[in-house]
Every structure is written in structure tokens, then in C-alpha cells.
Amino acid sequence: MVGNTRKKTDLNPNNSVDCVIFGFDFEQIKVLLIDRGQNLGNSKNLRALPGNLIYEEEDLDEAAYRVLEELTGIKDIYLEQVGAFGNPNRVNKESDREWLKSIRDEPNARVITAAYYSLVKIDDFVPRAHSFAKKAEWIPLSEIEELAFDHFEILQVAKEKLKQKIKIQPIGFNLLPEKFTLSQLHKLYECIFEKPLDKRNFRRKIQKLNILTNLKEKQRGVPHKPSQLYKFNEENYQLLTQNGYDNFGF
Amino acid sequence: MVGNTRKKTDLNPNNSVDCVIFGFDFEQIKVLLIDRGQNLGNSKNLRALPGNLIYEEEDLDEAAYRVLEELTGIKDIYLEQVGAFGNPNRVNKESDREWLKSIRDEPNARVITAAYYSLVKIDDFVPRAHSFAKKAEWIPLSEIEELAFDHFEILQVAKEKLKQKIKIQPIGFNLLPEKFTLSQLHKLYECIFEKPLDKRNFRRKIQKLNILTNLKEKQRGVPHKPSQLYKFNEENYQLLTQNGYDNFGF
DNA sequence: TTTGAAAGTGTCTAAAAGACAATTTGGCAT
DNA sequence: ATGCCAAATTGTCTTTTAGACACTTTCAAA
Image (cartoon, rainbow over all chains, first blue to last red; front, top):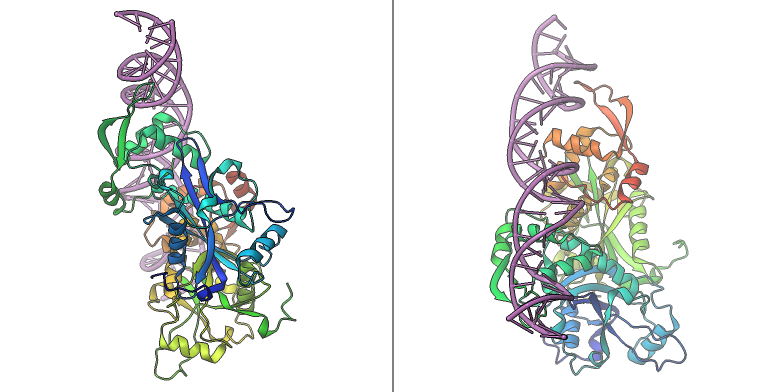
């Protein structure tokens, strides 16, 4: 549980975790990626998902939480496993080999990774004094075209899992601040589903679910009609789902 | 790709695949489990999911297909990944340790497993001349209460994934023979969802989807009104989904 | 020919989804 | 003070889907 006493030799050289960290800036979905720097010969500088080897005595979920906390400083983070990725050729790109040589004791080991995705409030992220964190950047999902290793493939699967999951469980609140507007929530769902959703129908449905608390508080300082602020009502959500309700799709 | 030239030393001692193989006998869902024999001191004889270590140069899906084919002889099998399971304590039971000693070169290695579930037509399974296959048995899902390692946990997750998946994609046909009746399909959905479904409503919906071809052929030799036989219409299914349709739930 | 056992079939009601546009409200510029 | 802009807010109608519900048909076997 406590990482302080761990030595580098306690790392399992064959297994890692990689995390797709989703954020939302009220405009678009972003992903937190690592810039590995371009000091790698003349090969491409591809960004990578944050990740690391796991310790021999560490559970997979635990390792993912550790990597996320080391990177973002966030402790209570929404985490969901995407799956295991272990194509023997996942380390085919030259730039990836080079990079591994510079950071791993056994750069040629075959590594099978457990991929996770997590949902964070974008403002909670303040880069920590960690070797990786300084080079972390939020990149718009729509602009990501290629990543290191098999990370682009992982990202695609993570996106798909997120889409499916949010139809069943309203996990989107993890991407929003405590207080949010219906328009922000609406925009979030449009971004996740990658399609426009009718405003009135969206509002009707989400309000009917009764999982939002109206905070009787308005947005301030916006140059237009200020919006009501809401928060997620965890208790009502529990009540709703304990009877088997699972239709949060739009 | 070809396993013939592989040596036991090419096995990756830290990573395995385990498969939840679902079958349906028109009455209930069954799972193909391995009986490890009781020659293990006085510890419990728990059944296990079929699985094995993967080869160093083998992809995870490939390994799962290999294990399934070695066991069942079935080549084109429906396969879906459940996820990675790597609790360091997954080999806590005494009987599991004993068993590993008898079959593994490195029985104490920490093993992270990629779990899969597969859907097979129960009659396609004919035990093969493979060490495991002889001891494979179809066990009713409802009777499984404890399994070796963390296999029971894997089974629970696999069940849940199957439930979710079948709401989105009509994968149930993989559990039925080429020709089947609407009653059989109905029963299958009841078994998977573990709840009764109204017969008329079920039929109305599935017929409306237009993914069944009526074979104009009847059941023979049943002591009651014989049923129409149908087959799954792959082409119509493609047409249906290419417009984004994904509501196969009941 | 009777009986048993499962197959097959239709209607009504309620709920949900989908399409669609005008009004309100605050900040800001003039 | 007035007018303007930008986004928030709100309701109705139609279509589709879900859910409840019971009797008739058909074959084989007794």
C-alpha cells in the first residue's frame, strides 16, 4: 500500500498500466498526454498515455490509481478498466524503442498493459513535481491522430467504452465541476456521443430523471441570461438505480 | 502463428489467458469448466476456467483462440475480452498453489491474466485429445458457487459484460444452432437476463428487427404443435446497424 | 378421439422519443 | 436610458416503443 519502501527492482518488468485521462473544458473532450521530448534522434515525437510498470505486489487497479495520483495529485478519481493490451508488436516504432531504452531497466521485455480510463475535473489537475507531470498536456480528443506504442488503439477502445458506459450510468458528472449548468451538461453529452442532441428533449429527460439538484443559484458575469446552477444528486441517483433503472442514454 | 515449433520455454511465466465458455442447452446457461482432479491432499477440489500461459510472441486474442481450440476443437468462436485480472492474491487458495506446482515451471510467479468469454453452440464441443479437454464439463451457471483462483470473480464480470453486450448486439445467436425456434431464442434471453420476458412482446420486437429468416421449415417429432425454424439473417443485421441501431435489449 | 403441451397470435394503454420556435434575461455598447 | 446581443428557458404535438394481457391452433401420444 505504501510506496515509499518500494525499490525499482520490485517492478514487474512485463506488466504495466496505461491511463486515458479524459477532461472536459465545456467546449470539447481533452485527453492528458505525456510529451516525451524530441531528444530522440530523428524519429517522430509521439505523445503517450501516462502509464508505468506495476510493482510485483501491486494490484492492477491500485497501480492505476498510483500512476494517476503521481501524475495529477488527484486521489478520488473515477477509474474504469478498458482491458488488457498485449500485442507483441506494440513496441514496433523506433521512437518507442529508443524511449524505453532511456527509462527502463529491461527495455526489450515484452510488456502487457492493463489500460484504464478515468474522468477528471479538468481544473483539479495541477501538474505535480513528478518527472512525467511536467510534460503533461491536455490535448483535444479530436486532434489526436497518432500516439506512441498502441496507445491510439487503447484510446479508441476507451472512447467506445465511455460511450457505452454513460448510456447506463451517469458518470459524466465526474467531468464537470461540483456546480454546473444544464447547457454544460448538454454540451458534454454531445461531445461524448459526437452528435448534436436536441436541447429541449435533453433537458426534459435529464430533469425527469430527478438526479439533479437545483442550487437556486445563478451564473454570474456572463454577457447573456445567466444560467441556473445544478449539482448531481447522489441520493436520488441511488434511489433510481436500486430498482434496476439503467437508461441514461440520449 | 504456428504453434508446433513452440517450446515450453517460450511461455511467458507471468501472463495467462482464462476463458469463460458459455453454452446453452435450451434450458439454461452452462459454463465449460475444468475438473483438476482430487489428488491434491485434502484441500478442496475446485473447478477452474480453462486457461493457460501465453507464449512470448503471442497476442492475447491469439492465445485465447489457441486455448479454446485446443480445448474444444472449435475454430471460429465468438470471443470477447472481459479484462485484465491481476490481484497479487489471486493464488491464495492452498489447492491452487498445489496445482500450480504440478503443472508450471515457475509455480510461484505472479500471474496477470487476460480474461475472455466466448459463446459456443454446445453441441459443437467434442472433448479433444488434450490433457485438459478430457476433464472439461458443462456446469450450469446457476450451480457455480466457488471456483479456483479468482475465476469466480472473472465469471461474475463476464456474466455482466455478456448482459450488457447483448443489449447492444444480438450475439446470442452464437449460442444457438443454425436453425432455431423463437421459443428457444426467447428462453435464451430469459436465461441471460435472469428474468421472465413476455412471450408476445418478445416475439413482436425480435420479428420487427427483421434479422431472422423464416426457414419455412418446422420442428419434427415434438409432442406438441411444431415450431417454425428460423436462422439469423446476417445481411439484414448489417443493414440495420449501419444506421447506428443498437437497441437489442428486452 | 381425446388429451397434453407448447406454438402462435392482436389490442389497448402508457411511456418515451423526436421534431419543432418563440420568449426571457442579463450584460454591454451606444 | 435604450437597444442589442447571446444564451437560457420553456411546451406541444406526433410517432414510436414498452408493457400488460388470454385464447386458439397444431401435432403426437395415449
